[in-house]
Length: 94
Image 1 (tube, rainbow, N blue to C red):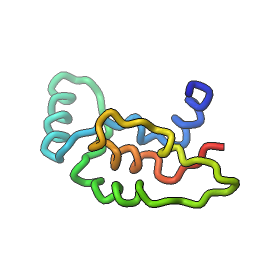
Image 2 (image 1 turned 60 degrees about the horizontal axis):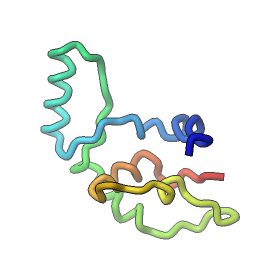
Image 3 (image 1 turned 60 degrees about the vertical axis):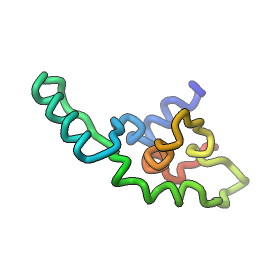
Image 4 (image 1 turned 90 degrees about the vertical axis):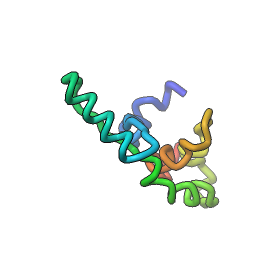
């Protein structure tokens, strides 16, 4: 929802990270960025954040029942779930 865009971007800068499946993939991306002088990027590596999948699924009691930002995100690929939880954690939308 656009009305939350600035708040979400401010509270969860990790949503701007590039996602790779492995460290090897991230290293290849960094090399490409360097080779073509494309600047810098921050990566979320799925191999390294897989433990967040369990945390994402746990219920959370929140004040007045407000939702977590994570719970409002739709996934086209469930493999990305840990990456989104890593970026948003238990950020609440009020």
